[in-house]
Each structure stands twice: as C-alpha cells, then as structure tokens.
Length: 77
Image (cartoon, rainbow, N blue to C red; front, side, top):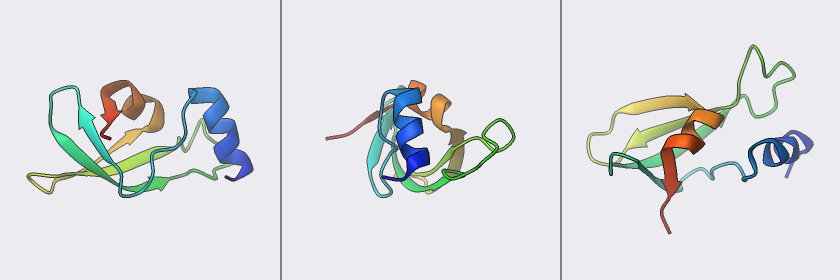
C-alpha cells in the first residue's frame, strides 16, 4: 500500500476498492470497479480520488469521488 493509499485508509476508514471487485449500489444494481483515478494526487482538493466503475448489466461507465462511492455502495462478498 502506498503512502497516499494509507492516508486514504485513515481518512475513509476503509481500503480503496480493488480493481475488479463487485459492489452493490443502494438501488440493488451491481457494478464492477474498473480503476481508481487520482490515487496519488498531490492536490486532492482539485483532483479527488475517483472510482471508475461499470454496470454489470448495461455496461455503462460511471465515476464518483471515493467518499461518494463509499457512501452509496457496499462490497459484494
């Protein structure tokens, strides 16, 4: 885990979502994480850490800041 990722864990109380992991939106729809953008930014206020994810059913691509993603999604086990 990089130093910045460690800071994110402290800030959000969670690890970064892993690329390829499956998450469920509060609506019930499933999404797969494609990538984490800006994880190593030196300016998180200008370039927030962002989760890019894709709908498992429709293939649409979405992006949310990490904090918003973690508020609306739960990881599937």
